[in-house]
View 1 (cartoon, one colour):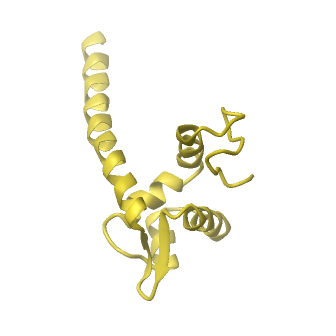
View 2 (cartoon, one colour):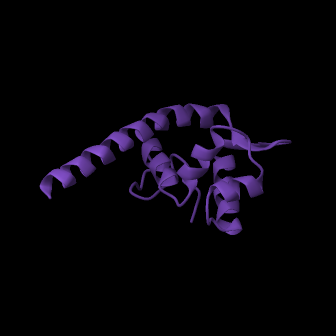
View 3 (cartoon, rainbow, N blue to C red):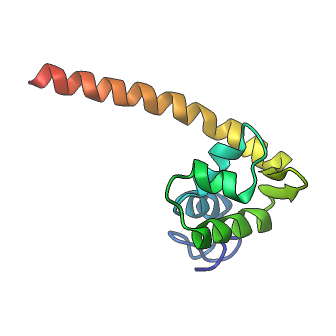
Length: 115
């Protein structure tokens, strides 16, 4: 599967609109999870693999390669970390975490009211 670059065909868009390229990237297995875990601190490959539960080394390596090529993750002496663009993207994604928690609570409450 090709790396989803803006301007090139991606899942859901033959023209590769930037938003579609981003959604293609974030929809890939563990891409969002890797960004989430790297927000707090730099992590080595093994630390990141441990944080990502049962991710295979091959998949983790593929996602890190994609995220690095798209300038969202970099590697330095302390391990992998978010670039400035990666941090900026995370700040946009972060409110989704809060929203999803409220959404889950609302759905749970509706289910309990229906029973």
